[in-house]
Amino acid sequence: MGVLTALAILAGLIVVHEAGHFFAATWQGIRVSGFSVGFGPVLLEKQRRGVQFALRAIPLGGFVSFPDDDEDSSIPKDDPDLLTNRPLHQRALVIAAGVLANLLLAWAVLLAQGALVGIPAGFSAIPGVLVSGVQQGQAAAASGLRSGDRILAVNGQDLGGGQSAVSQLVQLVKAAPEQTLTLKAERRGSSLQLSLTPADLGGVGRIGAQLQPSGQEVFRRPKGPGEVLRQANRQFGSLTRRTVDGFITLATHFGETASQVSGPVKIVEMGASLAKQGGSSLFLYTALISINLAVLNALPLPMLDGGQFLLLLIEGLRRKPLPERFQMAFMQSGFVLLVGLSLVLIVKDTSQLSAVQQLLSR
Image (tube, rainbow, N blue to C red; front, side, top):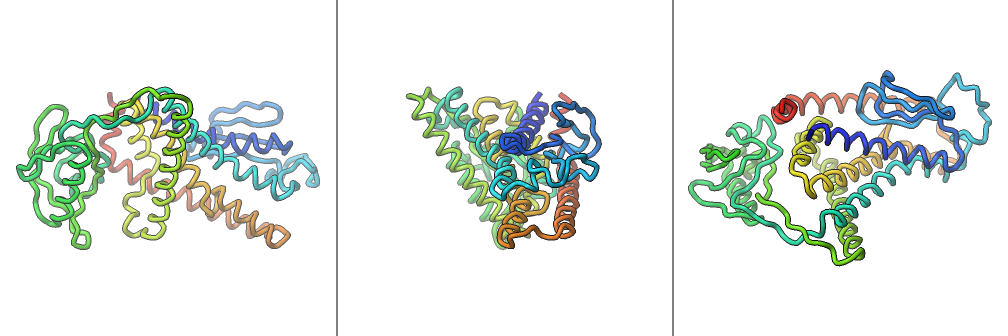
């Protein structure tokens, strides 16, 4: 059920994004010819009021199509309700609406978390540090660590619990490049003894795994709607800043961070794990992925909303559209890049994903 829940959330976020484009267009009276989830061959479709609603075979996103792009369309090219014949500000709203829809959804999810789950009131820690996001080929995986393991002691020294335990373990790892650490860990109630040798990354130890406090967050009932609203605003601002900072770090230190980039398979694995935890984790997962989709689509790259917005901005500065052949080449190169990157990430994630196979077999 965890995998199905994660897939449902991802599909829902794609639908919300494309619905933003769709409703921004129809609200302004702009003609729309199609609303698709996925790319490639059509699996299911339904025609309604001249619009094709379709589920397609390649689940890497979605799109809203317009008669402007259909060479066989019977609608005259000078029809005032075609997207290309509308003023710049109306077209800009259609392009931006997908990003805005994902941001609004993330904020609404965080608002629902405060109302339904409650307001964070501390952390109920248990001894140890929880391991997640183990990267194949890195030191943590080589030692035998798996996602879900709990590290209790290093070299015979108990770590304690909470964030201080995480900080202590991180410092021990950083200070021990190419040195073997003896770990006492726990996996599903069974005790383990493992040897971990952090890799040397510029004189700093690195193990290729995410570490977090072991335990669970404690929630209390909100004092009123105002507190729920303030909490949602704080979380939304924090998640958005962290997401933007992450993309900036990826762009400016790509060589160091490329191995940490995850694709659809890894995202589903993370969502499946959080779905099993329940509580606030699934709310945060949904909000975070929605914000990531918004920021990713806002990048000025071909095939993304930001790339189309860039073309629109250039058109506004030139006071006329760019040549059609240039726009076509720009968008086609983006499609090849997007599909190629997605395939690479899927292969990379799948090759690392024993955890997903375990989840699917349950």
